[in-house]
Each structure stands twice: as structure tokens, then as C-alpha cells.
Image (cartoon, rainbow, N blue to C red; front, side):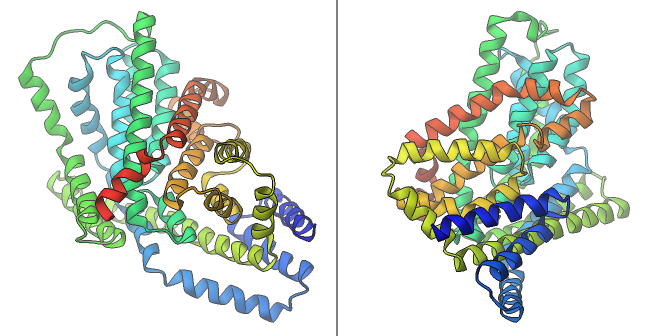
Amino acid sequence: MEALIAGLVILVLILFFLGLGIWVFAGLFLVSVSGLALLLDMPMQRIGSIGTSIIFRYGSAWELAAIPMFIWMGEIIFRTDISDRLFRGLAPLVDFVPGRLLHTNILGCTLFAAVSGSSAATTATVGKITTEELARRKYDTNLSIGSLAGAGSLGLLIPPSIVMIMYGILAEVSISRLFAAGILPGLLVAAIYSGYIMIVSLLSKEVAPAEEKRLSLGQRLRGVANLLPVFFLMVLVLGAIYSGLATPSEAAAVGVAAAILVAAVMRQLSWQIFVESLMGAVRTSCMVCIILIAAAFLSTAMGYLHVPQNIAQTISQLNLTPFTLILVLSLFYVLLGLFLDGISIIVMSLPITLPLATMAGFDPVWFGVYLVLMVELAQITPPVGFNLFVIQGLTGHPIGRVARAAMPFFFLMCLAVAILTIFPGIALWLPDILFG
């Protein structure tokens, strides 16, 4: 009962401070301090000592170095014409598939996710090309923006993923194993999306205009050459990690150097682009890292209050089957996704949900992939689905229309979650092969 009361107090404090509209990291710090002071009557000197140790521990964590590096790599790519090349390279490969150029959203986001690590960057970079081009060629608008919203969220799942790095640090799970675990589920989601587009296109010829002309083999090969910069970065970064030659943080630094080299070779590197990308990475990295530290403080405070342990014990006494537990957690995360962004969802829920999942027999690596999928759902659900806002800014369509267009892809991702739960080996097979 005491743990329940403490949990309710923490929840009320979170809703109160975040409801004031203050920064997320400040709200988390205030919740932690208030909870320890009010519920445990802990002196402020002791609270300050706990907070200081957390800041030093996480501020010096080598794994955190990967976050600003991957963000910087994405910022550099965002400011070059790699996204234009992506569309020109993919278009010849899909012009004979039902749905034709609509698949460029799926394939483009899948490939760009492998060099970005950010859902927003993936959606914005691919969307700034495909939305205008598909509209000009009279493709179905709802299917165009809906597929972009769904596929853009793959930036969180397909490595390198900033959210996976955060989960790995908080859950003390190998980031390399998490990266490997995200590949096949990411490809599964992309395949489900493309399959849906094919089915809709076969049922309704109006969603995709008739092809203008059949391309020759030479034209297709010349188009594929436009994909070489993306493939180069993918092979370099992911190959360094999975071969064991570099840690994720070291591979991120290599990725930045490679992105700068690619921009220079393409004659698009300027001092302005260098500075703008660097400052953009600094701003985003500071935001992510300080939220991560604040979340660690909140997790520590909840540990002192025994909230996660007691809630996990209470739920375990309900004797829920593993699948029933995942169903309950999924409904819980969908509800959270209506009101919170992905980072907030992870840092606030992980101290409670991870012990529940491990007690039910789920692998922490698998649960990380599952949690990222649930965060992806939050990216395309109003009122705070960030991908929806990005697409609204790109297209000018009302947020309600964007949300309705994304709804089929929301349910398709739910299908992917169900498949992953029934067949956990989809996520665990590759890391077991690569790392034993």
C-alpha cells in the first residue's frame, strides 16, 4: 500500500510539473527531489549528494559519446543532397512494383535510418523530397503522407538508434546487441508497410498513376549509383560495430568523419554547413543527454521509494501470462504515447516495466526492441506525435488529416509487435549469431 501511495504521489508530481509547461529535464529533477523530500523526509544535502553522483556517473559514461556523434552525422547528411540521390536511386528499382514510387518512402526511410538514428531527421530528410515529387506525379496523398509517417519512425529502430543507446545505458544492456536486434524487426516493419501498399495499389488503381515508360537496365544501374553514399556510410558504421573493430561510440566518430568526407567529395561541404551541423548536433545532444541524466535521477529516487520493486511484485501476484502482460503493457504504452514524447516514455516507464518483463521471462534485449516499437507508435499518434508535426510542416496539411492518413500504419506496426512477441527470435537471432 505504501508503494502504491508513493507511486501515485510520483505520478501526480510528474503530471503537475510537466503540466506547468517547464522543460522535461527540469520537471524530472523536481519530481525526484520532491519525492525524496516529501515521502522519505530525506535532507537536501543527501539528495544533492545523490544527484551529484548521478551527474558525474552518467556525464562521464563513454557510451553517451555515441549520441552527439550519431546526431552530428545525421545533421551533416541532412544538409547535403544525399536525400535527393536516395530518391533518384530508389525510383528505378520500384517502378515495376504495385504502388511504384510510394515504396520510395519505405525504402528511403529504411536506408536513411541506418545512417541517421533519429526518427525526426529520417522523416524530414526523406519527406522533403518524396512528398513534393509524389504530389506532382498525382499519387494518392493519404497513402503518401501515411507511409512517410509510419516509415519515418524506423529511424528509432534500425541502428544506429539514439533511443536504443538511451535504453542500453538505462537498462545496462549491450548497445551492440541492441543494434543487432533492431535490424530484422526494422526490416519486418518495412516489409509489412510495402506489402500493404502493394495490396492497396492492386485493389485501387487510382492510388498510383500508370507508369510513364519502362526503364532500361542501364538506366536502372545508373540510378543505383546514386545510393552509393548511403551504402558507404551504412557499411562503414555498422560493419565497424558488428565486426568487433569498434564500439558504437567509436563507430559513431568514424561515421562523422565519413559523412564529412562524403560531403567534401560531393563538393557540398562548406564552412557554413560544418558550423550549422555542429551547432544543431550540440543543441540536440545537450537536450537528450540532460534528459537522460534527469531520468536516471528519477529512477534512483523511485528505487529509494521501492516503487518499481513493489509494483512489479504486485503485478506478478496477479499471475498474468507473459502474453497477457505484454498486452497490458502495450495498452499502457499506447496511452502514454497520446501525451508524451518517446524519450519521456522510456525514461519514465523503464524502472517499472523492465523488472516486470524480466520477471515474466522476456529477454532485456528483446524488451528493448519491443519498447522502441511502442515509442514508434507514439511518434504517429496525436496529439503529440512528432512525426505528424514534421509532415504537417512539410506538406501544410492539417494535423488531423495527417493523423488519419497515418492510422493504417499504426495498426500495421501493432501487427509487427504481435509477430515479434510470438516469434521473439526475430529480434534475438542476429545478436546471438554475432555476439554469442
